[in-house]
Length: 119
Image: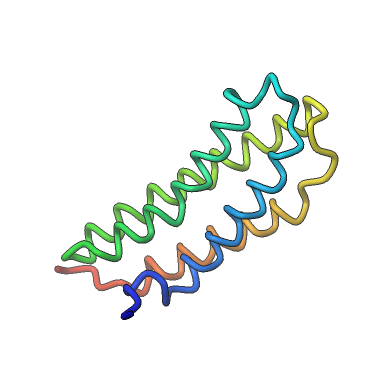
């Protein structure tokens, strides 16, 4: 089976790894958060590789840049929600996840810079 273009992108691969890590982390959230912060975090983290994939399937670099911008917005949302989870005492240490989020933002910014300006 032929792979789609997004599967070959390092930003997509890293965002999939982040998504798995957040899913594992949120398994330990309290039951009352299952449909609140846990659900919101999971939707946001799934949004990152999903938007990278959707953007890569678009016809123009401009469209791709748009979806990469949405992915970066989701990363900011994830960071905020993880900080809230720490403040609520659901997790103790998110340093590795914060590092991965920052790394992904930088990678996406570099990728955006590599796309052609005109379509």
